[in-house]
Image (cartoon, rainbow, N blue to C red):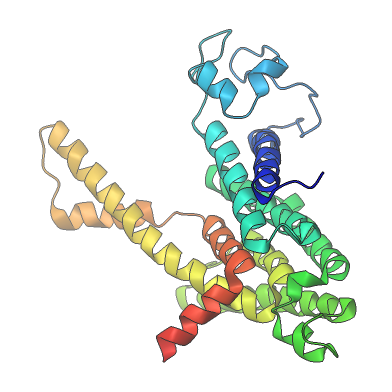
Length: 307
């Protein structure tokens, strides 16, 4: 019996929710010494150590049923857990819908990339570090997936122009486009980091960001990864301004609560100093994800802006 489009999209969403639950384990255990995604085997409460039953591991529903608290010790379960599950399920749905259910292999390739970007984002926010399992793993996986699923580079100029039939990208040229994208993504950030170190006299770009963009380039191709970097830079600029505004408001509010007044220039200096320490990895993940799913729409917007 043939399933309808709605049912297939619902299945991708459901799978995404359960994958999101697994991603939570990877994110939580990454900074913990001696723990991996497979050790310990059973999930447990970080506060009291009680092993969780399968009913307490149902994505979203368990968190809602428990009212966001551990059943054993009443420890408040962080919002990150349902957020990651909902975000993963929603992005898997978006990937399936934007790609088309008639391309299951391409959907699977894209949701694998998206899942890795989610892990990189939340680990970087927590630890200011991007796991090598995501970045280097992505660099290894990108050429392989590009060869197996050449549709990943259907819109990459190198793969499309070098293939005899532009409508059907050949595996070899998709593989070549992946390598070119990795070189472009990693190379441009290395150049930016070198230039920044020369100008400012200190490290301007973490090597984890270099590896993440190189991995992203393997899935996007050279043109796509440069657009992803530009989008990440724009979003990071807006995010940086908002973060500094948040710290500025916090500094002034605390000064007023203590009965004192902190001058505007001094509060601004503190906000600029504190607000600039924002990891770049999450912004790279946003840029890579947008280009991965909506490359043609991004190009159309750019062309309209130029005309």
